Amino acid sequence: MTEQRQIIHVVDDDEAMRDSMTWLLEGEGYQVACFDSAETFLKAYRRNMRGCLVLDVRMPEMSGLELHEKLDSLGSQLPVIFVTGHGDVPMAVGALQRGACDFIEKPFHNEDLLSRIVRALELDSQIHARRQRDGAISHRLEQLTQREREVMDLVVAGKLNKQIADELNISMKTVEAHRARVMEKMGVRTLAELVKVVLTVN
Image 1 (cartoon, helix red, strand yellow):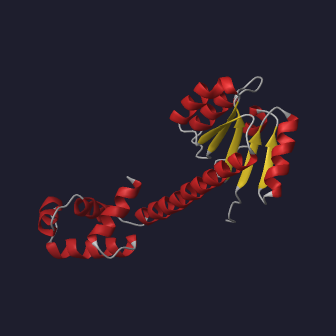
Image 2 (image 1 turned 120 degrees about the vertical axis):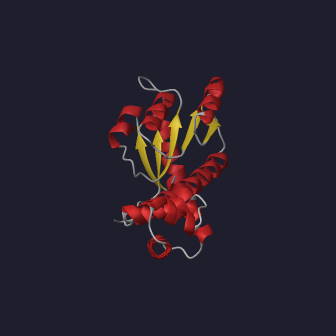
Image 3 (image 1 turned 120 degrees about the horizontal axis):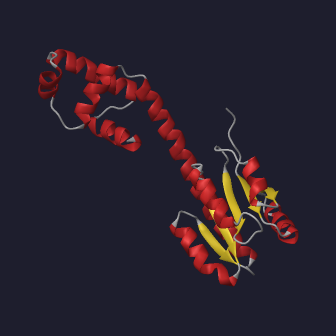
């Protein structure tokens, strides 16, 4: 699968604002996609989108806040920067509490917007790396047999080999063999690494 590029998705019903943001962001070397409404963006939305969303709070029909709630319900992790008028600040603060990345008040300085976009794209990179890592761990877990999984769960719970043997009614030698295969399949060398990996996805 090809690596998804980071794109700055601008959602604003004001054409002049879309044009000026595009000019600014493309001038800085960013890839930009503009949408004139929340509905238009939703049609283009994909779960694996990379980048960030620059979203106007006030739009006709579906507002920026409603779009943010909808994306949240779809499991989107795309960082959102709200663009607000002065009277919208309390709403934007509420959106931050519900997981938005940042907000900026109109009129704003270009440098302020750009610094927020840099932070949002860094956050997107962290989210993407975490998703890839979790996917790789989940894939390794799927390679375990049911018995290996049982042994691993007891090892991670802090049980000793003898306790595991008694609980599963198998020999110590069998526990040791399963344990070695678990470590190999999970790509770890120490018990601490195994615990850390398992806790990452649980």
